[in-house]
Every structure is written in C-alpha cells, then in structure tokens.
Image (cartoon, rainbow over all chains, first blue to last red; front, side, top):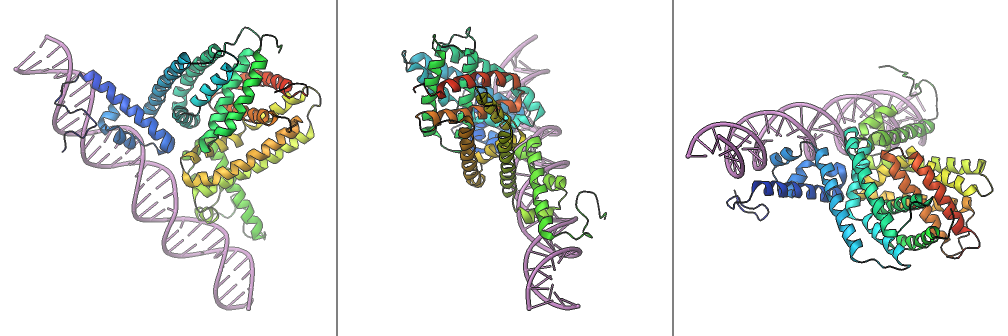
Length: 213
Length: 213
DNA sequence: GAACAAACAGTCAAGCCTGCTTGTTTCTTG
DNA sequence: CAAGAAACAAGCAGGCTTGACTGTTTGTTC
C-alpha cells in the first residue's frame, strides 16, 4: 500500500476533519461534472467518479447515497460557482455605450456554451425521464433561471416596467439556450457570432425608449 | 405457439415479403421513438424495442445490427414524416396579413415541442458523447436544419438578399429550439405564448422593408 | 485517556444490457 | 420441384453497474 499518491493529504498531517470532508465532497462533485461532460449521464458511473476523485467507494456512498444525489449536487455546485464567475466578469468590464448589449450577449453565449451548461443539459435530459431526478431538478432550474434573468435585466439596463420588455429578455435567454444546444454537437462559433450581432441590433432597437410594442 | 396475436399478419395470408419487411422496419422505428420519448436514450433497450414492436429479437438484429443504427434510422424516419406534416399544415391554412408571422412562429413552436423533437433531443445528447453516433447525426441534422430554414424563409416571406435577414431567421429557429428545450421538463406553454407574441412583433419590425440593419 | 460516533475502505451479489450464435421458416431461382 | 439464400426466432454468455454489507480508522466528548 502506498501512503502518499499525491492526491489525498496523508493522514499523518493533522487537518481539521471538517475541512477534509468539504474537500472530498468538492472533488467528488467536480469529477462528476467532468465525467458528465466527457461521457454523458449514462456513461457517468459512480465507480468512475470515485476513481477520478481519488475517493473510496465507501466514502462516496457515505456523502452521496445515490447517483442522483451526487449528480444534482454536482450541477448545483458548479452552477453556483459559474454564476459567481459570471457576475464577477460583468462587474469587471462591460462597455458603456451602444456596444454594451452585444457584450452582454457575448457573456451569456459564453455561459451557455461552457462545460457547466453541457453538464446541466445532461442533467435536464436525464431528468425528463426520471421522476425523482426531475423532482430535484425543476426547483433548481427555476432558481437559477430567475437569477440569470435578473442579472440579464440588470446588465442590459432594461426597464421591465414597460410592456414586452420582460418577454424580450426571456426570449434572449431562450435564444442563447438554443444556440448552446446547437453548439454541443457541432462547433457553431461563427454562425453564433453573426446571429448575436444581428440580435443585438434588433434588441437595441426594441428596447430603445422611443419604440412601442 | 399462437399464430395470430393481432399484431403481425398471420403467415397463412400471402403478402409480398417486401411489404412485410417494410412494415416490420416501420414498427421497429416507431417503437424506438416512443421509447425514446418515454424512457430516454439510455432507457431504450433494444430488447424493449423488439418487444413493443412485436418483432423478434433476431429480426430486429437483422434489420438494425446495432442500437445506434436503429435509433438514427428511427429519428430520421419520424423527422421526414413530421417534416411532411408541417409542410402540409402550412399549405392548408396560414393567415395572410400581419398575423402571419405569429402563426408561423406557432407552427414552429409546435414542431419544436412535439415528440419528434424530444426524440431528436435524446439523440443529440447521446451523440455528443458517442463518436459513431455523432458521425451519423451531424449530417442528418445539417440536412434537416437546412430544410427547416428554407421552409421558414418561405413561410415568412423573408427576403434573404437583405443583410441580416438570414441571421434573424436563424435566430428565430434557435429561439424555438431553446423554448423546446425548456418545455421538456416543465410545461411552458403560457410563457412561450407571451414570448412568441413579442418576438413576432420584433421580427415584423426588423423584417419590414423600411428598416435598416 | 477511554468510550462513543462518524467517516471511510474494500468486497460482493443481484440485475440488466448488448450483441453473438444456433436453429427454423419463407422466398427465389434454376 | 429441389436447392440455396435470405429472413427470422430464441436463447445465452460476457461485461458492467448499482448499492449494500462488513470491518477499520479518525475525531470528539466526558
């Protein structure tokens, strides 16, 4: 038996157990997302996850009794992380003038083509035909959806009190979701760029203070 | 051994073998789509398909040597059928005036929330992580995508020679794809209606002869 | 420092899925 | 009408996955 294989801190070092537990859960969830992206939901066996995370099978089953528990927790975890990253990126630098809308769309499109989206897609599709999974995914999705919507409204500086504005923002999010889906099996970057260019123009026109719905 | 269980024509009746073969393939493909919708890709075992189709396992393997062959053929089959239905529906009745755009969107949205879309979604997601499956799905998807695009342009009466029009049509299709995805785990009918109302307005404004990109 | 609880490691059995193999029926061709 | 080829039926074996079980180590509390 080797003691130190470079992954897990050797037990001779005193580390608070709570901290180790947290790290172990994090490794499990991250390994899960990686495998979700690489192999899809069905291809993500719990054995594979524990192997990649460097966590024993027993420990894994202790933290996440079932595969569904593990996968839902993993997607929720990375979604939160990614949401924070997105907010930070928006905070850092967004142009102020008429190029702002386009920049926001770029940010959203990046988000909806990231590994996080891919993992979430796998989860959605799996949840469609798995009752218990869906029960966990639907509320998660609603929460994340509302959050994303709120952020988009803010970034675009849209006035939701005007009729139709809310729907336009939602349409924008559904559009990037559709674009994200198209990008999963084919590299769609060029086409996406042109579409977003055009949609940014249409959006600016529709959101402009002067236009009526 | 029962002879006539009401599913397969009894062999005492003389039916051209070519016809029986065709019917058997059709039953297999239809059962595949049904199961794809009900249970997802991973849940669609070949045994289940042959059972539901009333076809022996040997016959199934004769027609479709692998699961991938079967699934791709099935989705292609229903896609063609559905495409024809859609064209027929468009042919029958579409308003002429300013409500035409909205009606076209309705048609598209119906298409992208139908069982056919669900089955195709399962196939896409599965193909993402299965090399051989993707090799078959990508060309199929391109063919269908181009066809849908062409039809949409025609139905909308859009002038693709103008810059940006092509991109708006594509955006519309990506939007309904995104809406279709959202509809798979939650009933999204009301929200979709409002979004499409608003999108139709934006589209009419952007496609109007007078507007510049 | 001793006892108790939680976390963890490794093994195992049951169940299922895929596709191959063997044997039978039906159609076609000379 | 006979023989060969194609289509079809059914069973089966190998491989994999899931989650449960048993025993050990680590941390906490009195």
